[in-house]
Image 1 (cartoon, helix red, strand yellow):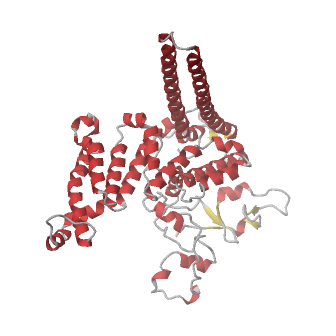
Image 2 (cartoon, one colour):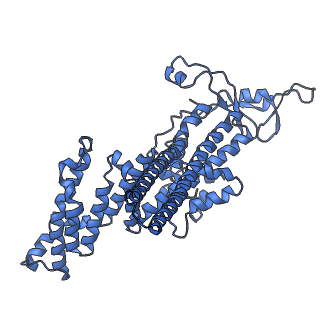
Image 3 (cartoon, rainbow, N blue to C red):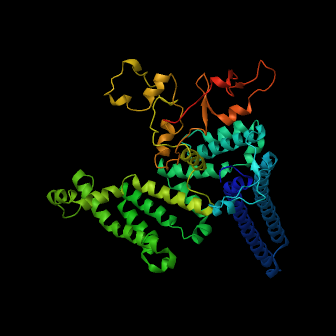
Length: 489
């Protein structure tokens, strides 16, 4: 498909409906649990009153008042869940209306079938609508979507401790367009960022434990291994803090059960093998800590000599145990959290901003693209030496920038910019053979256009303007006989 269509945009943005849908489902189950809990509590309290008819009236009255207070608290909690449900539903409605807007920016174009590409013909149905890319309202719509992609990326990758920069950007944009607040799940992604940052940067397990407890039932259905990873990190933290006895007790209570095959389902054998490998390393890790303490003098191993300890510290296995207590364990836990989070809400692990950037750069990338440091807004690159006095043997002039300098122009290729070059490194090249127009003609000012474009503006009026053509960019007028046919080198 060479042109953007309405169906393409709907399919590309179907993922934005998954998060609120999943939130509605989880919220509904929370309502069910709340009602069942309140129902059981009320029936038990009323049963106590009925079973004890001899209770003094004052005690009965106090029990009834307790029931009323409990029911009032239940109503407040239920109303909070109802408000959440209404908010999630309003997000779906706002996103539907947002997609429905682009129906007004479409134009009808007859679909020309390609006999050599039947798959493409099947993708574009006869009733599909093409977008009018010259419509200013459509361009504004695209600008809002780009801002939302930036908000999504900045919210998930925020590193500031005084606030989420993505939410700050969203609030500033919402001042002009309040509906943007309904088009991105900023609250969920902000919580995701806080949990991930607490793991990788702060090495704090409290937020991830709380998130796991909130989603325990849903994570169990997807065969999550997050609980083991949390307990394993907790055990390693106790070892690192030299709380050996607490670590041994913790492993017996929280890790040993993962050695049982009954703990795993048939389709969960990958996690079982991985967990067993880590459990086997626990005993050796205790020996490593004892040896490490002997060499440093902070912990002593009974019966161990300094000579034997020094021999073991030079073994490859010793280096592997040292690696277990490195920051890599927090990165592994962070990756496990990301996998579970994205699987739970049915979203991609890739940032949507990167997906769209990759698609665009793949259509622009050529074998001539390179990392052009001068095409950046983040670096102060010193000016190159005068191109007229360059040394042709110098490697710094081997890139295309030398020719841009000779022409007095700047390389604005987005793929060549340092900010995007790394992202485009593994992308395929655009299958571009030539960018020369069919039947190209050059005007006296050096601009080249296809003759069909020039002929469309050819003037046939009075004798003074007969045979004049107009440059579409500069609006300069030239005689037809001043144009020359050019050929690709």
